[in-house]
Amino acid sequence: MEHTIAFSLEDLKEHLNEQQYSSVFVLVDENTHTHCLTPFHLALNDSVEYEVLEVPAGESSKSIEIAYQLWQAMIDLHADRKSCLINLGGGMITDLGGFIASTFKRGISFIHVPTTVLSMVDASIGGKTGVNLEHLKNQVGTFAQPQFVVADPIWLSTLSPSEIRSGFAEIIKHGLISPTDYLDACLNTELTNEGVGKLIKGSIEIKMTIVQEDPFEQNVRKALNFGHTAGHAYEALSHQAKTPVLHGDAVAWGMRVALSLSQMKSGFPVAKAHEIDRFLQTHYGEFKPSFSPKQLWELMLSDKKNEGGEVKFVLLSAPGHPVVNQTVTFKEFEEALDQLLHNHEEA
Ligand SMILES: NC(=O)c1ccc[n+]([C@@H]2O[C@H](COP(=O)([O-])OP(=O)(O)OC[C@H]3O[C@@H](n4cnc5c(N)ncnc54)[C@H](O)[C@@H]3O)[C@@H](O)[C@H]2O)c1
Ligand SMILES: [Zn+2]
Image (cartoon, rainbow, N blue to C red; front, side):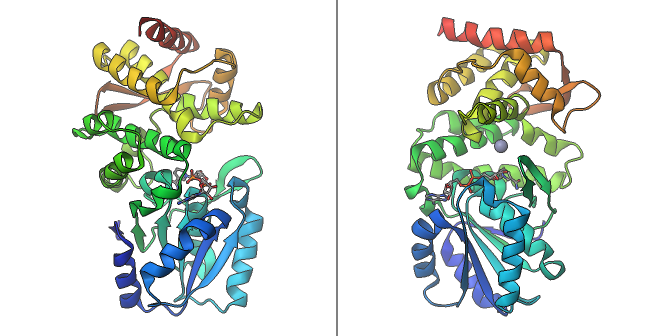
């Protein structure tokens, strides 16, 4: 990958001065307009002029209709092929902005300034952009790399504790799948802005390393789906039932299921599995199974990543050692769920 990652807005100022884009646009949603635009403006210290493009906050703005309006606005404001779009927001904004920039006039430069934990460590890294079609996630999109990413932890101060906790789940996931001592750092971290802020750089490095090895998700990149097979099913059912859980909370539960299966099927050390399970349970609470194993299973079967009537998981043979494409049967899945309840009784 060509682009640069920086950790302070100061570096963005330098980059903009060096690049001399013909015009600069900044994409925000209502919340990042309120909380982030002023500090962003102050950091740039009037060194560049830009036009602000604003969309409503929330996943429903990640749509082709909004993309159309943004393309139109950029044409009206005389954007050309040397223009640059800065995406100042969470994963919704970086996915949407990356998509419109990578398609506008066959692709203009774009920069991500992620403002949520999840978008810093996950959505802004790896070059996937896209929009949803109705309720189907990320159906239209591109692989396109930003020119520059600035993951500055200053934005954490206005995030809610639940957003911080949700993003922390992806950080723990990076710890579990990477062969470094980063996992221990995660397990010894307090769930505060400061604690999580300190883990961001390492988390980004882990995702970058994996993505560089396998940019188009042929093999090792699949490890990043750890916890997401069961997690996505839980997340989707919670939305259908109108009791939505945050993505990271669902992934935390999905990682507990995957760890339980890893212990059963892949030789993951039992004591370590219990330690991590307790940690996840402490921070994310006990899963109250308002959905039956069968409901979850049906959803996993229909996931686009699974085919031929089989459900595949990413498992771990040890911390830092993912094994991808592991077929799991319904019986094993039920056993893993039972095991989680049992872990809880023991604790
Ligand atoms: N491209 C990828 O590889 C990738 C990976 C993971 C997730 N994603 C996508 O990311 C999106 C989820 O990202 P998200 O959780 O960041 O959602 P989001 O962008 O919707 O942000 C969550 C909420 O926080 C608000 N917000 C953002 N920054 C803030 C700040 N500093 N202070 C206060 N409020 C702030 C937003 O306005 C929003 O209401 C999904 O669309 C998902 O598909 C993409
Ligand atoms: Zn995720």
